Length: 268
Image (cartoon, rainbow, N blue to C red; front, side, top):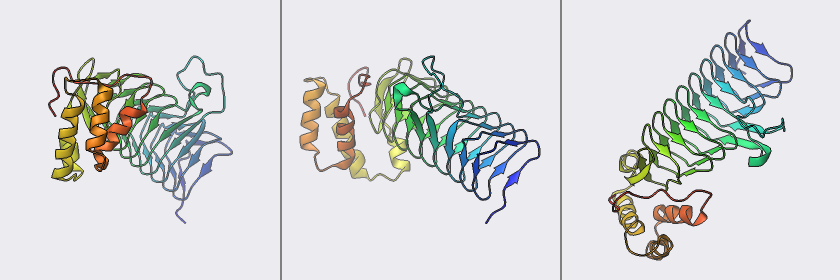
């Protein structure tokens, strides 16, 4: 059993649950309803409060504010929660808010995510595994972010938007629509600019998978017909291609936002 290390200047409120090997650094505060998994490390001046669970081996750096009440004027103190997975990296000044009654009462973050300095996860968001937020990323309330998505520095995502798995949103972009899985969006306001080819290659997607995605992308965002008609055509042609069908399922599922599309043509 690894020894816990609690700095004398830290405050750990009665009721907090700390796993083996937890380290709480100088001037950090752990609230009464917080649960820290084995090996969690809080550097100096970290606050973790609310009904918050932090998974094993997650590291949180100075001046991060985790679990304070959401930035929603409709919040009335309801007992909402925040759950953060294992092996996450939460850098300086990051803010992550719990859920609200109007959004399902919980905010969730998956495993092995990295939130770089001053990034923000709003209330009632659901962030997948292996997601990267660069510095100063702003994720408004009620958003969904799929596994392995990357959001570049200073980018902003509007409330209720969906960011698909393996997608890339460029730095300083403003996303007001849903970004398809494997897609890449750039600009303010952001437009779909192709597929996240570099990300696919880095994650060892085969050449044939990437080729299928390219063909499907061009069909989905061609000029002919409606999007629903093109989705139906792609679903039929690529029904045995799991990566393509992820995009089809994402579009069919829909949401409160429209789909982010290319400015001109459908180059992938």
